Amino acid sequence: MTDEGDEPTEELSDENNSEEIEIVDPVRILEEKVEELEKEKQYSAAELINLRQRYARERNSLLKFSGMNLASKILPVMDYLEKAISIENSETEKFLEGVNLTMKTLKLILENEGVEKIDAQDKVFNPSFMEAIAVIPVPEGKEPGSVMEVIEDGYMFHERVLRPVKVIVSEDQN
Image: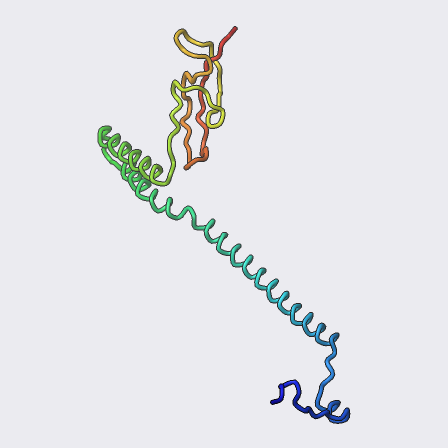
């Protein structure tokens, strides 16, 4: 019995070995790897530029057409106003009915789009969504800093102020 390590092996001469074995140059291998990585880097950079350009085009398109939905919903309101204006015999009752219908439709459209009226009457003044245009002395039975009168309604668009409420605020004159 012989061990595998004990088998006789043939030694090749140096002449045969040098022809069959290719000399591996580590510098050349590293240069090829660097070249390959540079190509990958260029490809990734080009892909990133393309993604940014596509994102910019899509964003511009979204911004351009974002109001289209609201505009299409407001068109019937414009039609109602045109009908109200075109009433020949100025029947006040029909005219007012048309304007009221238009107002209700417009309010409904804006509510559906996320626009809400800010309720400020008799509330404590809040500068986050109110603008004080005048200050008056506190009347009896009222708290200082409360809204006494709403001059112009304000509106929220989802969680943001679309237009602040313009109010008159009470102030302690001490």
